[in-house]
Length: 78
Image 1 (spheres, rainbow, N blue to C red):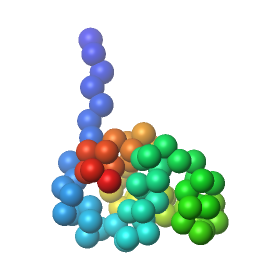
Image 2 (spheres, rainbow, N blue to C red):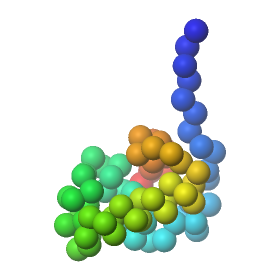
Image 3 (tube, helix red, strand yellow):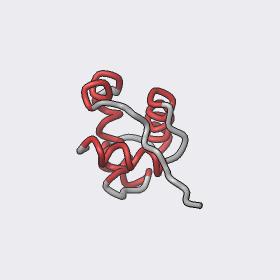
């Protein structure tokens, strides 16, 4: 028996219109392996704001984990 993880079926154009530019930027940083603090410093924000962006991304895209967010970002070329 094997376990298969599925990536949510979200098209790039849909994601681009659903996510705000700063949300996309935060997602790019996280997908690149940055921590919340590193992302916040790079974007000139607080860690709490980055956390809020990422929570909104999860809600908008129906994603539950950071790993799923990273897989989605990589598959979309962010």
